[in-house]
Structure formats: structure tokens, C-alpha cells
Length: 88
Image (cartoon, rainbow, N blue to C red; front, side, top):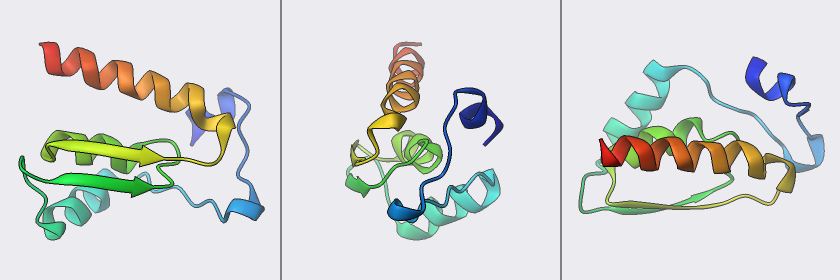
């Protein structure tokens, strides 16, 4: 949340934005979902990408759709980090 604030982002009521940030909760959500390396996930409203990051570690592929274009730089940075991680 601090990182988003530093980038000038504020939550928008019209989108009903609520961002998860607890890694334990995010991991539990993904673990309980049964997602594995054969699963393709469609994530609607990835927000800052906290859940997206965990999904990408477990799923075959994650397709995320975000309507708030002000989050595009945050999500692009996440994509780069995930791509670099995959190459290592």
C-alpha cells in the first residue's frame, strides 16, 4: 500500500478497490483454490498484483484484466519482475 501511495495512487470508490497485502492470506487463497502448473487463471481486477504474483508462482498462466489504467505502471513492473524470476 505504501508503494502505491508513493506512486501517487489512491483507492477509487467507483471501482470498489480493496487490496490484499497479507502474504499468508494470499498463499492460503491460492493453496485452497487447487491451482497447479496445469491451470490457466483469469483474474479480474488484479489491482496492484499481490494475488497475481502468488498465482503466477503456482499456475501455468495468469491472464489479468484491470479497468483502472492508473495501475498499469504497477502491473507492468510486476510483469518484468516475474519474467526475470522465470529466467533465473
